[in-house]
Length: 291
Image (cartoon, rainbow, N blue to C red; front, side):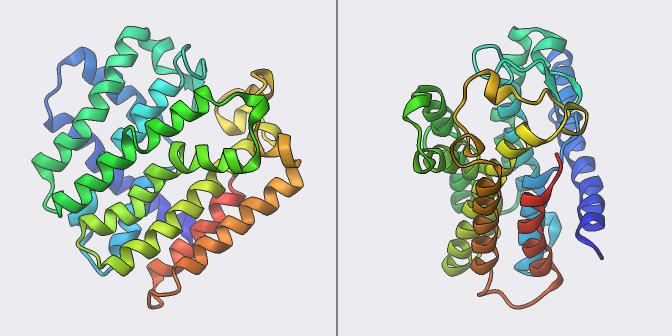
């Protein structure tokens, strides 16, 4: 089975659980509608897919990781709602549709994001049967002030004219990489993986995260708004220092490929399987994707 078909098949199952969990939480209509709007906006479901793939890699039942996988997508979706707000990236479109704050107003968008963030952990506690201490702790750290939110703060406060490639890597290891590491190493922790397995998947996740962000920066230069689902060239318009701005597109592509190669190397300790093959192929997909 090709990676594309595998992702498509798993995406259907992930989304079925995602929307089912939201309904089971019985959230009041005004919030439920705004939360569901952004959850249904589409996307690759990369983070929950990674968690499902890790379960396969470790020989665990998919049902054990599904609450954790959906919690990841709740948190990722909240971050996108908040990223689009005027105070941050000020984006009016997300995945070809009006951003949450353009659809529902800033107040509801902020609170819908808050609810998605908190109710990610409702999913874990109400429907999960994994290692709450190890996996839940990993997810919480990756999402908050020592992970994704720290990356956002760094992105907002480090002056653009002081940014180097190393500084960009530092920002993106937190802003993008932390939640991707939570999708790999955190999922392994949730599933009671060994310390060696968790460490290897942490290395895989960090490199995937950096490759993903570099690819995002490149797409903002080389893609078009129809393919990307949001306006292109926004980085340049906001005078943001990006990998292509510092290195040029070709060198940035080479850097992304290097991180993808390191991600694949991190999986050497695992025995060959269809899921290992899928994760290796995913490392290349992250770099070569078109949106």
